Length: 279
Ligand SMILES: Nc1ncnc2c1ncn2[C@@H]1O[C@H](COP(=O)(O)OP(=O)(O)OP(=O)(O)O)[C@@H](O)[C@H]1O
Ligand SMILES: [Mg+2]
Image 1 (cartoon, helix red, strand yellow):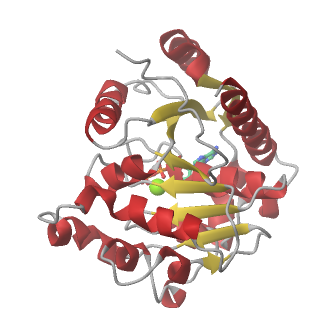
Image 2 (image 1 turned 135 degrees about the vertical axis):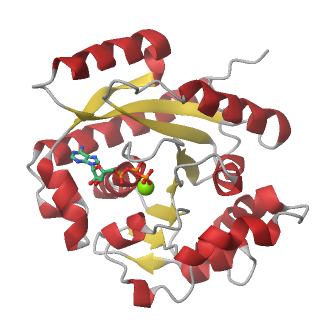
């Protein structure tokens, strides 16, 4: 069997790199990481698109896209009514863009359930975007998944080069991880053989809580090098920023949360470079 954790080799000079933020557990930091890793990557020179695939639309809100402004959304993209390019908005961060979602997305599954290409809707949309020279050329696409292993998440996994898994530093952190890894394996077998686990990011680490350290140790022991060195601390500035429609890096660049997301972005880029060198 192939190593399920190997980073997929890059073919030719293909860009962008497509990473899906996935964990079917709710509230573990997927959206916060999509917003702030995206911002940090843009701040260090990448051109980034965040695709909001959660009907809750929190990534869109957190990036300052008012609901009324979401004329075209990822729902329209996945139903074939719009191209991804048409759905994209600029954000307050230079070089960071978002394709927003709306609640319509919650009905998508039923609508496309019997279509043959139902799992490839996003992959096809991203491919068309990469082939079209009409707008910004993205070096990273981050996909914010909903808290489920539904067809929407499967679309993200079928479109991605690799998965980034946020795990909250809490007692049940590892619960559900085997289910997630099983789904990744199924997607590799049936839909996307190159799909890799890019890394596991520990979130909401609380230095005052002994349990947090225990969780970090356990997860590192279980998942080894797949766990990024950077641990994202629990930081009130991180949770305040979305209500201002801003990434924490714009809201308070100096806070511990912003600094951690900048370190995470460098690690992501380093892993990409290492994968490229090995290919
Ligand atoms: N480092 C952090 N410090 C403090 N609060 C945080 C941090 N990361 C996330 N949060 C808060 O925790 C909550 C859950 O985070 P987030 O929405 O990113 O998780 P999620 O996995 O996307 O959730 P869902 O599964 O509902 O989509 C949010 O209120 C967010 O502001
Ligand atoms: Mg979310």
